[in-house]
Amino acid sequence: MLGEKRSRNLFAEETGSKASEAKVPEAKVPEPEVPVLEAQVPDVPENEESALNNQESPAQIQPPPRRDPSVRHALFFQKEETRSFSEVLREVQGYLSQKYSSLVMEDGTEESKHQIRRFAAQYIQNQRIAVEGMTTEELIDRIYSEMAEFGFLTKYIYGDGIEEIDINAWDDVEIQCTGGVTKKLEEHFESPEHAINVVRRMLHISGMVLDDASPSVLGHLSKNIRIAVLKTPIVDADVGIAASIRIVNPQSMKKEDFIRGGTATEEMLTFLSDCIRYGISVCVAGATSSGKTTLLGWLLTTIPDKKRIYSIENGSRELALVRRTDGKVVNSVIHTLTRDSENERQRVDQIALLDMALRFNPDIIVVGEMRGPEANAAQEAARTGVAVVTTIHSMSCDATYRRMVSLCKRAVDMNDDTLFGFVTEAYPIVAFCKQLENKQRRLMEIMECEIRPDGSRDFRPLFQYRITENRIENGRFIIEGAHEQVNPISESLARRLMENGMPQDQIQGLRSMPEKERGVEV
Image (tube, rainbow, N blue to C red):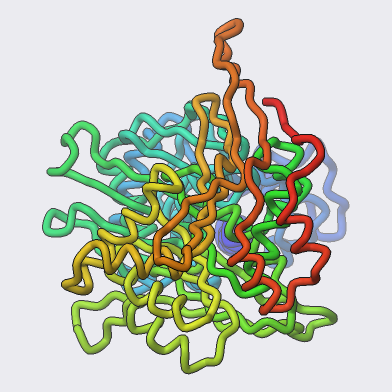
């Protein structure tokens, strides 16, 4: 350790100079051939004592053995000069920014992190800085976490079971855990300025800048972590910053997890999986935090290895669809990302990637989320016969198609009826997810849009979650309800599935109603 190296050097200097210059009273200094008695050694500093014992001459003094770290810390740090952590952090950040600005601005490589820790530790030790309640190592660790990582947020961002971190203000931070439980954190930032600096470091990873000219920013920390940020003047100065950090791990869920948690029944999950498997486009709709991306991620894990997948995601990659066995890739996946740029020639949007997708001979195109004019390109791809799987923000299955129409109109000047006909043809199946009042997630409905021979549309609910009662018990919100199959699939959808290879017995099961409805109670 750097601290240990410095300690050894200091001891070496002292033993080579101070110890040799130490003046011992002549009356008590023995002749060289006379053994030195313990009682004859005068009082000397601790670091010199071991050097004088059992030595024939000061010139032959050897460095003392390595001491306990607490002893070294006591030598370097003066407790009476302790300061607050925020003050120390600002001082160290200012020093490193001035002396090692290029290092501070690097993109978080292991080497740059190591250098930040080393230089920060060196400065703390040279300046004899101490913070009350922290050991030297603890202070260095926390400084490093603030400079190279994201302070107290790091353990939540990269921890297990965390889906969202909401920063409402510099002193108001809450997390949402898997299962919908929300907790207020006791920890918070040191000040509004501290919160802004930490979030700026996060955004730097994705090449985004947060300042007065750009007080509203969308960015990402890694392929599955998205961040949305607002700062002053959009939020109040005493708030500092507001941010939402979304951590998406769609493949962490298994079919059994959905069933056990009451999100959906096995029949519903199998139906959606089979639709994608046999070339039927599916749109998963819902509001923010409804679980639609989690459901989409699981559905994509069920795609057979022989099916070729082309994924398109906006800015950050949340899906990890490549599968390996014994180090070899066993499926066929192409992951693509949009790229934002002030230079129009360098900008790559979802529309461009959708146009490119058809040239890669995909069986399934995955559009991470439809939020703009790319919805028109997606529906056009779906109408070519390629299965398109996507998500969209919507409030119901019925509303999903109207939402698609409004997004398509951002790209083309076309009347609503024509676009409505296109999107209903493109997506025969819509699944709607919802987070209930008690924070539990439910697949509320799976709906088929049947196109009749005369061109009319029949919206056919296939599965639904029906709520039977809402009540409050001991301050806890209780929702009772059950999933049920309400209609079989249409003859036209059965015919398409048959043409795409679905076995006859599976189709027959979807065309008939179950003997008894199966439900899951909250």
